[in-house]
Length: 248
Image (cartoon, rainbow, N blue to C red; front, side, top):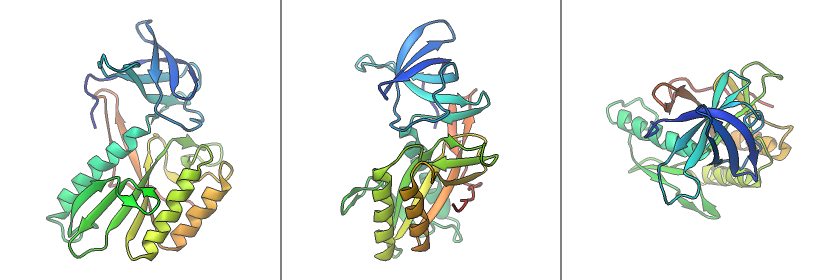
C-alpha cells in the first residue's frame, strides 16, 4: 500500500487518552494526531522517538492527521495504525489469488473469492476465502509490534496487552477448523528486525495457552513481515518470507 500525499515526519511529544498523540513535525509545527491503536504500544510510543504521520487533507475530520509509523529503539520502523494490517493482508491475499489462477501448486489454487468481515456465530472474523469445491478458509489478522530483543534478538511477540477479544477469535477459529473449514491466524508483523514470533505469555498467559491449543487442533498460524519504504511512503507484506513461530 502507498500513502496518498506521502508521510510527514516528526518527534512524538506524548500519547494520551489512548487515541491522541501530540507531535512536533520536522518543520516545528505542533499537531495532534489520531492514534488508531488500542494496545499498550510498548516500545512504540516513547516520547522523543521519530514518528511519521499521514495528512488525510479531509476537512471533515476532527483530527486530519493519523499517526502511522514510529521508530523503535532508534532503529526499526513499526506501523502503529492497526487498521493498516487488514489493508496490507487484503492486498497480499488478492495478489495470491491472482497468482493461484495459473499455478496449480499454489496454496490457494481453486479459490476464487475473497470476502471481508464474514459473519460467524458470535460476531465476525477478518476474511473468508472461498472456492467451488474447496473448504472455506477463515482468516483472522493480528498486528504484531511488540519487540522482545531482550529475550532473544529478532523476537517479536503478540499481544502487547491482555485481549479477551483475541482469545474469542482463537476459540472461534478452532471451532471452524473442527467443522471442516480451514482456519488461519495471520500475524501481520508490522515491525522491522523481527525474525521469529511468539505469544507474549508474560502479558497474557491465557492467550498464549489458547494459541498453543488451537494449533494442536489444526488452526494454521502464519506470520508475514511488513517491508517499509520511507522514500516511496509505502509498505507491503513479504509473503515469500514467512516467519517461524516459536513455542512458549
